[in-house]
Each structure stands twice: as C-alpha cells, then as structure tokens.
Image (cartoon, rainbow, N blue to C red; front, side):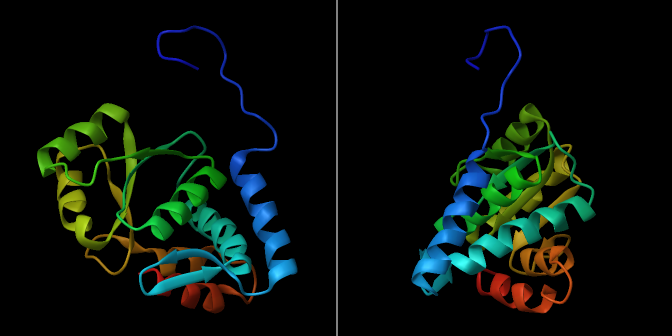
Length: 177
C-alpha cells in the first residue's frame, strides 16, 4: 500500500516466495542440477534452492524470528541476497534492504528507523553491518560466513532442515558462506 494511504494491507495468494519455490521444484524435476543462482565462484541448483529456503525459514523460526518481524539485510552477492530474501519471506519476516555503501552510523540509523529486530549480512559489508547493530535495536545477526556474534547461514539451515537432511543442506549453504 502506498505511504500515507489508509486501509488493510493484503497479501496475494500464492505469495511470491511460494511461487518461486514451486517454480524451482519444477525446474529441478525438468532440468536436474541446472544452476538457479550463480555468483562468481558459487552456484546452487534449483533443487537445492527449493530445499534451502524452507530449511532456512525453519531455522529462523527456531531462533525466535516471528511473522511480521523486520530484518535488516545488507548483502552484496546476488545469490546470498536471493536466498536471504526468500528465506525471510518464507518465515513471515519483512526484509529491509540496506545500501552497500552506508557508514556504520547510517546503517544504525536505518536499522532503528525500520524497526529491525535482526540482521542478515555477509561478505565485505558484514563488518560495518555488525558494528551498526551496537547502535540499533538489532540483537540477533545471521551471516553468510563465520563472523563473531552471528549465526552462520550454514548452521541456520542445518538447524532448520527436516529429518536427516541437515548435514546435506548445511554443506550446500556453506558454499554461500
């Protein structure tokens, strides 16, 4: 709904994430291991993408993320950003993308203004984003990679994967960390 307009918000059924996951499953069945996401030196197939998103959403829930929570997102990789946004949406959270070139102070202000409860970051922007959490309401961080004070995406997915597949999807997720 445009800013300043009154009325109840609506969500289209099926949601974008639900439609994307259904399409990814269909492509996996038709094309096998064809890449769904490609970043320099990293790729993930449609089947892995379709399994990682709900596993990450379940992991987010296990870490206390609730429907309607706002997540600050600062990621430079297209694959990481795609995985994060769809996992957040599947968990019912609202992703709030942050600019890559913002200073620590600007990031802290933006995180506070949007009401972010947690952060998803990684790569070369993780240091500034994690530092900004000290000056915001963000108290929990998830990261693509291993960073002090943040839960890695691989651990998040491993914790959220359904019976017996945690190690397999954790390994796939580690490719993005």
